[in-house]
Amino acid sequence: MNNNGLITLEQFIVDQESQYPDAKGSLSKIFRAIELASKIVNRDVRKAGLVDILGSQGETNIQGEEQKKLDVIANNIFISAFSRSGEVCAVISEEEDEIHHLPKTENEKYIIAMDPLDGSSNIDVNASIGTIFSVYKRKSKSGTPTLDDCLQAGNQQVAAGYVIYGSSTMLIYTTGNGVNGFTLDDGIQEFCLSHRNIKTPEDGNFFSVNEGNLSDFPEGITDYISYCKEKDQATNRPYSARYIGSMIADLHRNILKGGIFIYPPTTKAPNGKLRLMYECNPMSFVVEQAGGKAHTGVCPVMDVETTALHQRVPVFVGSKNMVNKALAMHHAAEKKS
Image (cartoon, rainbow, N blue to C red; front, side, top):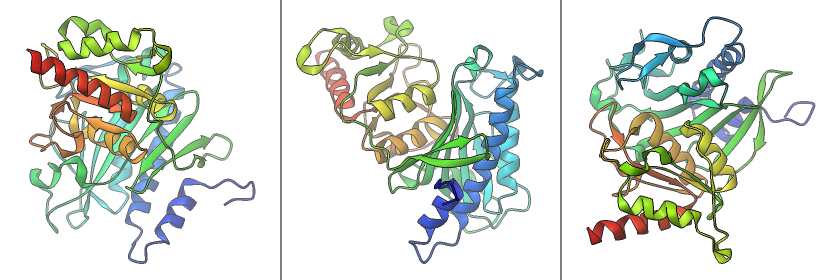
């Protein structure tokens, strides 16, 4: 704790590690890299309209999506930070086709999965965007990390979290022992503990779904959306629709206030649209550690067998009772058809 009574991210992690005698400081080094990189990205995001880093890069990523200039910049910043951490041997990124092997790190034991700039379609209109990250321990002991080292289920995550670049910049993370949030103090350039032991309400008043795709949704999902809009005083309906087009922004609100985020299977994307490794697994880890629920409609998100770096899944994630209701209506409609 500093002289102002603030607990910085670094102090908090050191205090947490002191409770585990076998801890060797590896995660501290990784989080220092995340902290440094996110401060640099935050700086670039905030001056994006003043320098030539808005707009398209003129290329597409492995997803077939147009890469924004800041997508590429953020990706490079985080990879550079991880390469200097002394703990990370490889990075898998939504912005890269293959595993990014870090030089001279064959004996390091951690792998990072990340979406360096989630919601990047919002960059040019100054809406909230963010970075999503996940930490895994490699399976092999040494040597160049293999695809098998990277293709791990979400239930094998060592840590996960996100940084949201909004009206303030926040870093939220879990190591499997609850969720804590830190807000960047621009004056001292430190992330300071602002949200201790975050708990997601079991019920909420927000539903986040892209209703522009309603005609492509399964019947059970359209039934649930109609349910959300119905008036019912006993269940505090209708709920409020909130959809930004940035998973990180929609889920951040719902984690704190209570709500559900849905990106279901559609006729155009029957396997879902969001990436398992870079979006769904890390956000599911955070949500479930905060007391919420994350499901694909078939099984818990973090139990999905990972078969490809850029695998996609449907997702229902947020307040536990809202997710259960959506799943119940989805499954009931499937049984009728």
